[in-house]
Image (cartoon, rainbow, N blue to C red):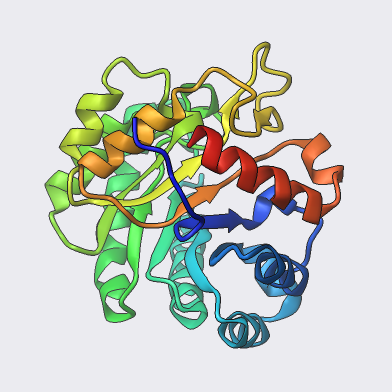
Length: 273
């Protein structure tokens, strides 16, 4: 298996150094020689959208994606409309920050009817696509591990995400392959192949054993059981050679000084990804 030999594709997903503000994360990436950063909307809002855009532009970093849009469903028509409006704002924010990828965490169903929830996700994406195209932004569906179906996303396999992309057929729609969410799927390699030409992001971390927490239990690459390099080569085989985001939710890592996190991240990236 081919090793990565440099950091030209490495991206810091801002959640990995959760305590850092936008200016601190930008400075950390510059100091560490990491060329990409993925922003989170709440942190951008805390710094200010225009200021965040100015800082990242002046630092010479590239923005791999914005997290996150989605969370479409709601129990009321008014609530659903507000969520569509928020997704339009997210599209505008992505364009302002200089990225063409808005990651969609599609959200749970508003009722126990999970099939209806999935159908509604598809309809919302279709409604947003013309607006996204006007801003030059691509919507990237991120399927999540099935354990999140009731709380975070009714889209739980890459196959489900691929089906929406295939049905709607537009260059402004694709998928994110996040190893934490898809590594377990017996169909993952077939579905990565099926996603050829529509993969908009590749996220890495690791699955710890035992899993210490559903949300906060992701590990640094090499500390778990995921075949990271095999998955990376599969997405490359499907034509994706874009940024590789390190996205880790883990309280211990969040409490570690950010510069140390980036140092370990770079080492593990070359060794395991």
